Image 1 (cartoon, rainbow, N blue to C red):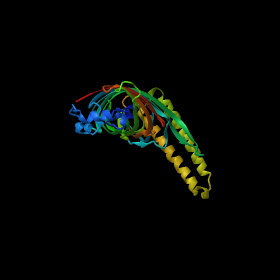
Image 2 (image 1 turned 180 degrees about the vertical axis):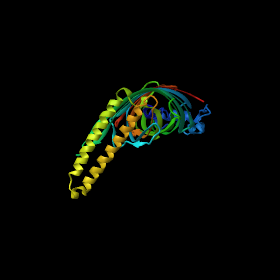
Image 3 (image 1 turned 30 degrees about the vertical axis):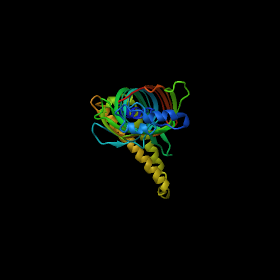
Image 4 (image 1 turned 135 degrees about the vertical axis):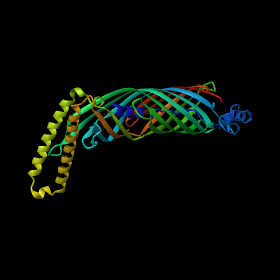
Length: 374
């Protein structure tokens, strides 16, 4: 389904950790005095970052000013869908929030991304990101109605698994500060996800603070290893609207049987509710709790009956029928915890791994970064 493709593309591509762990480091400590003195007298050979030479002469060690990273990313994430409205054949839209319940819908995906970057300022990295993804979205949902005792039961269910390819492109920046090998980075980016079936790319925003430390346990002074912890917050554009053929929305082979069964159950429960209400005394019918119970049951049963009857009519011309939908979607948890490590073979070449967990999103990333001077 097209709406699920959009949801899974956004939750995958906008949640890819993009930050590359390099930074401008203030050299401190007596044992590093020789390195600090050499920075102050050496000529800085590159045009970037702006003010790079001035900063280097103050005892800061700068990374190479340009880089290219290649990352592979996998994740599994739960999604939340609400404010669902559905209509058929460009007819009225019906809000189904009260009667439709989604059960642990997941997005599982793998993606390959490329990230070119430059240090515009000594403490500000800017970058672009381009990605390709293969994603599977699993969604399970049901239509629920109440009976005379306000017990809700499922009268129809549907599930879908959509596999698709998507492309993302974005821009971002990472302010950083480093002192004596310890560092803080505040990664933030904007991304647009493009799928062929959508009218326009969808927008997302990511914020990822990280706190880390770089160690030099190797004989080669250019080799080091870094560890970090942090968080990751994902915000996506919440509104989704679309129009698609009925055959892409439900399984037509079993749809008529489910509709007939659902309509029969709605009639049965409506009879139970009416019988219960008519059995109450006038005083009991004025009881606020009974009024709420009665109104809720009638509203839910009317909503379920209307949508099933409308779908029943659309099934008679299933091949030419269409579905209009509108919904709000979001990750179940906007934040998750991040841990990572990077091994630097030399100032040009780094290898990185990172894992995200806690909450409802799990993710793993592996990457290779090459840096050079501009």
